Image (cartoon, rainbow, N blue to C red; front, side):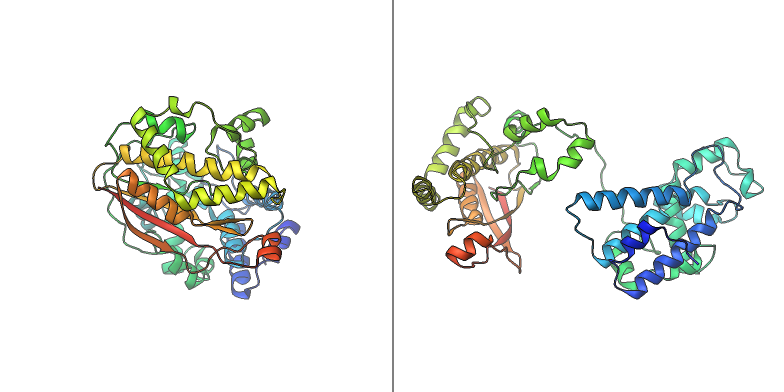
Length: 400
């Protein structure tokens, strides 16, 4: 019988599917047996990652969920979270000599063994063998789950068989578990993570040097992303002063963004001039800005900073779109995800405005995919202007 803690029991309440609850109970019980105090330890000279470790992770997960305004996960999401916590380190208890097929599967997934395993019993692995198992434990974990799911063998066998088929199907998209064919790897290369604002970084990159560009930029929805991701930023040691600086450096998307002065110092004279002309030529956008300015003067906007935010959001994005056109090779696609917005009853067609600017920048607008379910409006707007569903879109542009 699985021994759930009080916090686990609390999280389990959000799982309404009895099959998922039963599966978690069986998985939890199997993991308890794998890490039982009487079970021989494969990894003896490193930190123990048994059930107490799992319980600590559950505590952390519960605190993070509480910090997320108390919003609970769906049944499947909670199932995957808890199952992942229970199973993620079992590879450290994998007896690779006893189960060579698991060892081989892990190697196919990417494990690299630095030693020849020669242990005669589970508790007899040398320090170097332990290091190798520990280093590759994530692959051994995946391989063990796969092996147990297919064969029903090992202490995990019955538990792995309870994983719901719908979840297994969801995992099949490019995953290598459950005896799926491993996709051939493409060319590998270096990944560069650039720290800073796209407004200052993009102009420093090489012209005609990129084959593809995809982005989901901040939306013009008043969300302060520095607050939305305050927890993540805190974990990255970004203090309050740095958050304030970041808020003003990033592209405008909230009423707290001030005017950015001297933007022309980042961009070439040609791009800056053409982006400005394209922005000024957006007649519908300029009419909306004028309308919002009138609403502001009549004190009919719930925040006077909305006008500045809308104007600068489109102005700065025009500069970004023109800069991206410079960066992409001829024929390269540019994919953007964004939502339309509404202020004071005025529906702002972000998709059409940005696509028109993209054409000015030298892109062909191939597609604007519209999600089947749109976005609603704030209660204040619906009370005064009625409800109007707003498009949520994916734009596909290609450089000419």
